[in-house]
Length: 116
Length: 114
Image (tube, rainbow over all chains, first blue to last red; front, side):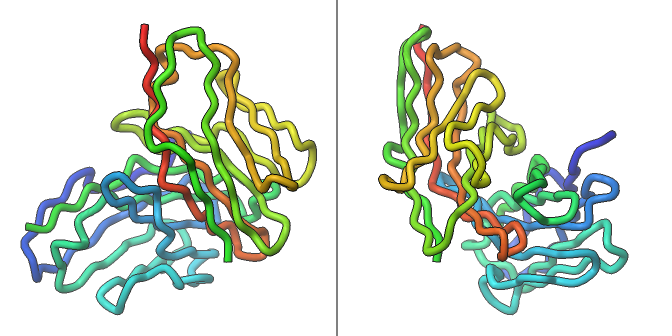
């Protein structure tokens, strides 16, 4: 029934703090994606999970960013030592098996992160 | 590497007029192409996709797009704009062997005037 959900919807933090952003994919979807959307830009790929493992993390900007999906459903994006440049909307998407010839990626509403 | 260019960050049309949003792609292998729409305070929603079947793809809400390999284009059209079409539109490209990673364009904001 439910779509992709993300919590919190808004997060304000101070420079240098640690934040966690959560994504609940559509039940049964094995593929999960994180994207980042800066103001006035299109979404930018961060990381892709197939089940519990990160199949492609080539979009993570640096080692302050980390994501997990320990049980193959919920995923958490973790950002250490936040910087003002990390301010953006973080989008999560899920799809059934990760094959775009047959699948559709469904996006959540996003978490707006503001680093002061 | 794949990339997408959307020509025109803002497009304004009158209600009832033709909508044309431009997208050009770059890909070294046959691509999959997508158009997503983002309404204010909502998540991205898939309008339509091309995955190497018919080159003219019909989507939701009366939108369609045509894949033109010779022009490396995938422009989005709708014959008659409605006020409810006002939103941000994103073109995206992917290749199947990358596990569904999407590369998005910068987006085109569509305004519809009464």
